[in-house]
Amino acid sequence: TLEVDTGVPWPTLHEDLANIAIVPIGYIQKAGDANFARKPVGTGPYRFVEWVKDDHIDLAAFPGYWGKAPTLKEVRIRPVPVDAARTAGLISGETDVVWGVSPVDARTLEKNPGVKVLRTITQRNIYLAFDHWRKAGGAFKKGGPGSPGLPAGKPNPFQNLKVRRAVAHAVNVPELIRTVMHGSGAPATQLAPPPSFGYNKRLAPLPFDPARAKKLLAEAGFPAGFPMRLDCSNDRYINDGPMCEAISGMLRKVGIEATPNPRTKAVFFPALDNGDFTVYQAGWGTDAVGPTFSAVFHTQDAKKGVGRINRGRYSNKEVDALIAKASSEMDDAKRQAMWEKAWEIVIGEVAVLPLYQQEAIIGVQKNVQLTPRFNEWILAQEITLAGRN
Image: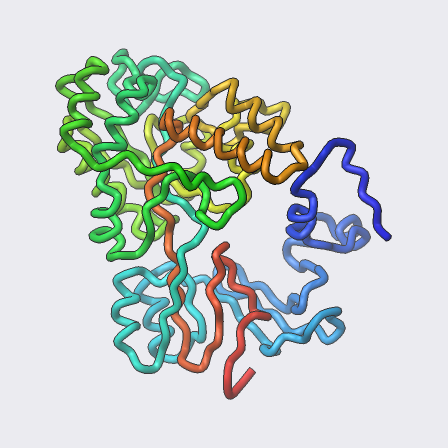
C-alpha cells in the first residue's frame, strides 16, 4: 500500500499522479539534465534509439515493458513544418501518420482512396486576450507603463468592459470557422472543453451584432473607434495568421482600426511574456479546470506561482477566492458549482474572449488504425499497421 500525505486537501491528486512521468533519478543525477534530454530513459513501451536534431527521433519497442507489448516495433518521428510537404509525404506513402493536416489539405486527402482523414474536436481553445492593467498606450518597454498596441498617451480602451464586449459582438465566430477554418472547429464559450469537469453548460457566447458593438463603443467614449494592434503567431496554430487577418477585418467594420501583427512563434511568445502586446490571439489546451484558472485568471503572483499565463493581468478577488476554495474542496458537486461560478464571472467580464475549439485533423494510410485523442496526443502504442510493423 502506498500512502501519500499531501499536507492539504487535494481533490485532483489521482488525475495529477497519472500525468507524472517516471524517470530514473540515479541516471539523471549522474548524466545531468542536458544529457538526459539527449538520451532519455523512462518506463514506457518504447526505448530511445536516436535523435538527429531537426530531422528525426527513432524509437524501438522495449522488450521488458511491464504492460502490453506495442504492435509497432520501430517508430520514426519526423518534424515537417510545411503543410504541403506533410501532405505529399502521406500521398507518396513515405509517411504512415501525419498530425496537423490543414483543413484545405484535408479536403484533398479525403478524395484520395489510398489514405484516410481522422478528425476530432480537441481541448485546445483559440482566444483573444486583453491588456487589463496599463492605463494608456506607449512605446514598449519591459515593465513600462505604456500599452504598445495603442497610440502613445491615448487611454487603454480595453480596461472598459463595454469595449471588450464590443469586440465580442464584432467577431463572427461561426463565419470564421466556415471561411478561415474551412468548417474545422467548434465555437467556444469558455477556455474549457464541454466534456471536462467544471465546464459551465449555461454559458453562451455573445451574439454577432455589429450594431450593438458600435453602440457599446460609443457608450464607452469611443464613438469613432480607435486604432490598435492585434498580435498573433503565424506558425503555431492551424491557420493562425489568416485568422488574425480575418478578426482584424471584422473589428475594422465596427470602427476598431485593428492592424494584424503576425509573427513566428519563436518571436511571438517571448514578446507576450515580456508584455509587448495590447490584444493578442493565442491558444490554451487542457481540460484541467484548476490549472486553467490558476494560470490564466488568477491575479499574478510569481512567489505563489499563480497567474503565469495571465499576461494581461486580469484581477478579481472573488475569482481568486473561488480558485482557492475549489482547489481544496473534496466534494465534487460543490467543487463543480464553484468552477461554474468562476466561469460566469470571468466570461461575464470578458477577461478573455474564447473563439473556437480547434479540431485535430490526422491523415493516415488506409491500413492504419488510430483513434484521435481529445488531448491532441499521438501515442505509438495505440497505432496498429496492418501488414507490417
